[in-house]
Amino acid sequence: MRRFALIVVAAAAAAVVITQADAAELQAFPRAGLVSQDSPLRGAPRDTASLQAQMGRGEALEIRAERGDHWQVWDYRRERGGWLRKSQVLVLPRGDGAAAELLSQLRLARQQFGTEGLGLGLAAAYVQAATPAELAGPGGAEALEAMGQFAERIADRASTAAARPNEGQLAAQLDVAARYGLKFEQFESAEEGRVQVCYEGEAFRRVLVTAATPEQRARAALALTRPDCLNPLATPREAEARDQWRRQVLVQVDVTTLTPPWKNRLQMRRAGVAASLAFAPTRRGAVGDAAPALAEFAAIVPSELTEDDQSAYADTAMRVNAARWLGTGAGSRDFGAVQLAWQPGADGERCVELKEGGRLAARRCGFGQVALASASLNREGRALALAVQPLDGWRELWLFLKGREGWRVEVLPPAPARPGLGVAEFAGWVPGGAQMLLAREFRAEGRYRRSFEVVSLDNLATERQSGEPALLGAFQRWSDPAWRSASPMRR
Image (tube, rainbow, N blue to C red):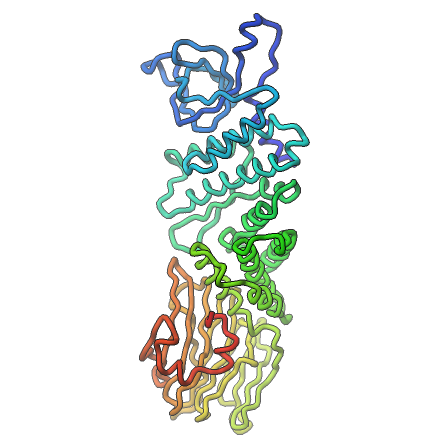
């Protein structure tokens, strides 16, 4: 509440109490205004006068007098007066219809990128001018949502690789946003050399407690739960608490009231959060359950996805796919000739042991969640595939391979990159014992790729690959039925 009150205080800086004065002067001045474009504040009403300050678009000021085509203004934040051209100042309306007029101007600014600072000023002015009933009604929801979206657009611009947050227009927008009480967080992005800047979301939280429409509530919930605005340096306990909060935010929106595109977007976010929560217990040695994530993912209607939703849909599919073996519960597997079991290792590791003829033949340890229910042995009994999830949203494939010198273990990651989102999964055995079908999908280090591969078991080299399984004859003939029916990669 205290932080949000800063918005009202900043807007109030543009309003003054008129004392007794000449009647004509009362009608004209003082007036509240907003800087409509980045402008120099001059010491006199001419362009050659001394520069007092550089004003950013959206800053609130008081208009005290006019001379020719200039306004004499006072900047309360800098405690400094000066002159601005009239074309560089938007005079704010006042009186009974002021809130409605400000809302109309706000709608126009909302449609134009680059006007975020001015839009924030208009939204803050509406918050100051509206009655309590207006602020709690549809107009208040619209103004608060616009404020949050303006802040989000500024943060997204500051997160681009070429952004210079301390320079130019972007610096001015960030400064104006800070003056209206908006807070931003930043942390190192998964993409090297880029900083992720995120709006902390106070305006969106307030949208959820106003008379907002279902779509406004959905947009607010999605803005508050963005996966790219999660601190990658959070501890496991912090990450789990954060995801629990994200789930609580998302369930506040009734999906049955939404149009198909917005329902899909909410279902995708719910599925992704449920997948993260399914993995969270494995960090403390407990067993997670992927069933809620799979149910949310199954509720998505692919035919109703827009073109802009395809990237988010792919990310959701990877998150859910990475976690889909959680909760299957197998502690050992017996394939007759070989047996597979996991044992606790040192410092919280999980160790997988493969025995042949009752004797230990291979052992590998790691901190990932081992899914023994996923294990598949080829017909020749010389290769075994196993799904292991070491990180939230990232699943590897462990291959136990038998050669002349006995069994060895190889790890196939989704990509040769720093982990992001990705899955490498077994898709079938090719008869003859020399090849395996492998499906990979990943988004890491700024790249996205999905591939279906025929891999040699001799050296793990990819012999053939395609972006679609239907284009590979081996996938048509030999893909595993369980993979075809259950894998989200078959979407």
